[in-house]
Image (cartoon, rainbow, N blue to C red):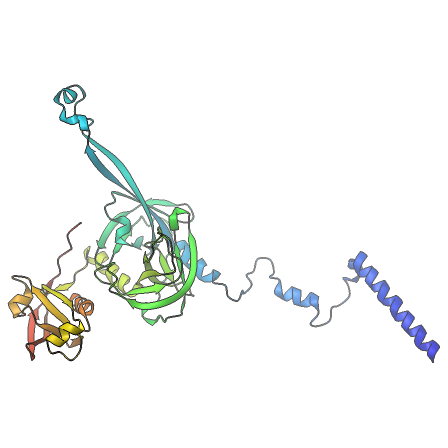
Length: 387
């Protein structure tokens, strides 16, 4: 029996040695052998994508980027800036010989930003500050196509503008998402042309919603994100994990000029509403009553004998305005507009702006401890003067 086991052991050892040598030196001799289920060869085949197909990659947002990137364009602007008169132009002898050709020096100032193609007709959403003052605007697609663009209209108070390029080719268009359903923590991608280096995609999350009182725009309701946004990203797309547009990248909080993890985007719900008005009428119409307000501090609320700081203190009333005609006075505290509660001055501004000029709305106020209700005919908000 002992001899039998010794023979068996020697035979197995020799077979293993032969298999090792063959597998090392001549692996093709074993190619015809069937592999057992769950073998290394089978697992490798499953993990390795077949040529021409795309394997699913957990944690990748390549498909979302693939949908959004073609619709995000680079915007290049230029503006002629006139300089001061040549110092010798005050000399009549110099002017006699050289004329006025040295009278004013001018140069061209260039800028860059991003935009999003939102319509097959060639409409592009971007920021107002990207195209402000430009006399030439060029739009470049990621595939190299370039177009001269014209401004359809703009809205400085929301920092939005609409451009249009010729729709002579099938333009890639981004799909609108639902910014109202966003939650803090949702994955987002920022697509744009930072620093002019070319198309760039960065990722992050929604870090806050409804950001206002930042002093960036008149009307503020920003999406805050930590997706890297840098100069040149302005006007670009903020998209969700499906590649749908949920915001227009607008501003960053920075002490160095670069991204510090706090960026702001205009929700697509507001951007779409502004765009539709611009395309239809060439501008944005908002309600106005002609009042100046200030925030209610705890000290002011106590002095006016109010139970809370909710509301907006009327600091001034413009002469001849709808508010003056209706009887609103400085010192009144506005608490409701059209039945909707006024939480602060920013909310009051948005509520009045949403009213249709020519319509009538009831304003509820506190005046010297009494409740006062006034019906006001809404006027049209004037366009802010250029700085």
